[in-house]
Length: 85
Image (cartoon, rainbow, N blue to C red):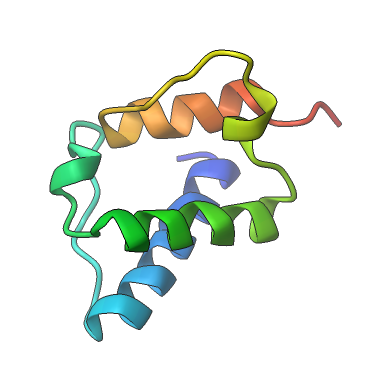
């Protein structure tokens, strides 16, 4: 697991704890995001929190409308638009 994926998992766990008041479920590469347990507001908070934590938002950087279905696709999308150091 790379540093970016770890950060995404940590932010997910923080948002989950705020929204649900419990420990977050395990995210596998095949976890379908819509079935992760976060509702649309929770997911929006998750993406906003990632923007604050990581310093970029791939959804605004991408010229194409893309909606990752699984956790692996979500991480890959963030990796694709991660600013080059």
